[in-house]
Length: 105
Image 1 (cartoon, rainbow, N blue to C red):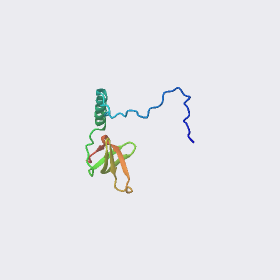
Image 2 (spheres, rainbow, N blue to C red):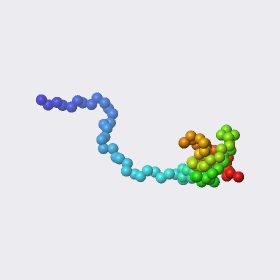
Image 3 (spheres, rainbow, N blue to C red):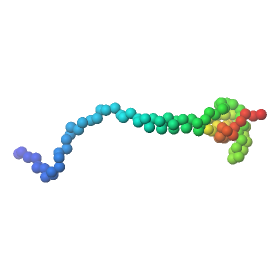
């Protein structure tokens, strides 16, 4: 017994299974995009600035919220400096803005 295919009632175009696949390279960024990226990176560097302390250096952090604490620099994540203060539980760090940290007198 032979089964014949049903006739299509739709008048739409048949879907082609042989669609061309694009092998082109991704588009290069436009000049405006490159300029914006460069300006964003420069602004981030200016905002973060350079922290003038090294890990392990003895410093004094003075902040109205954290108070004055003397400790060693453990973490530097610009613009913040994390201090390990003697007498506090292990793993306790106090973070200060690097502008509020100075070397002891």
